[in-house]
Amino acid sequence: MAPLVEGKHPGGFLVWEASRDYTRETITVAAGTLEPGTVLGRITASGAYAAHDPAAMDGTETAIAVLWGRADASAGEAPAVALIRGPAIVNRHDLVFAGAPVDAEITAAHAALLAIGILVR
Image 1 (cartoon, rainbow, N blue to C red):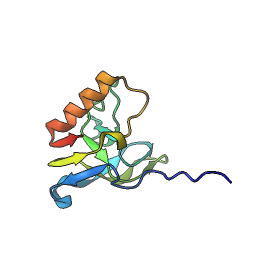
Image 2 (cartoon, helix red, strand yellow):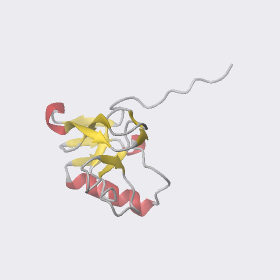
Image 3 (tube, rainbow, N blue to C red):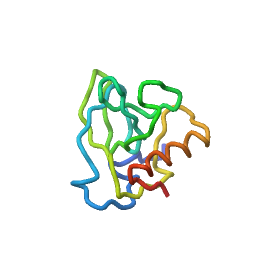
Image 4 (cartoon, one colour):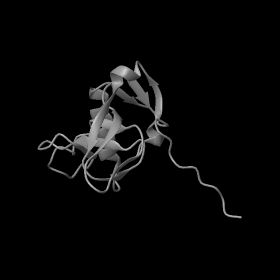
């Protein structure tokens, strides 16, 4: 019998937040299929969100939010909910980073999230 594998759950990364009506908002995801807990950046030109990419030069190089639930924007922009401000605490082990960032890039993303009130523990 094949082992069962449980995927990520919406909000599974969240340890604590002050008020969901304050810390979360509906956003627009630019492209791709993203899992809950994906660290996001905002594309400067469009204002849409995409997976945080430290090597980018379009605004997504700065971590600015954490995706709440799965988002499927494979056919174009799609609405989603994200944790966009604190006070909030998230579990570092449940955050999802695109690609294979090095430790320094992850540390910088954690610092950027802390600047908006999202503490990574």
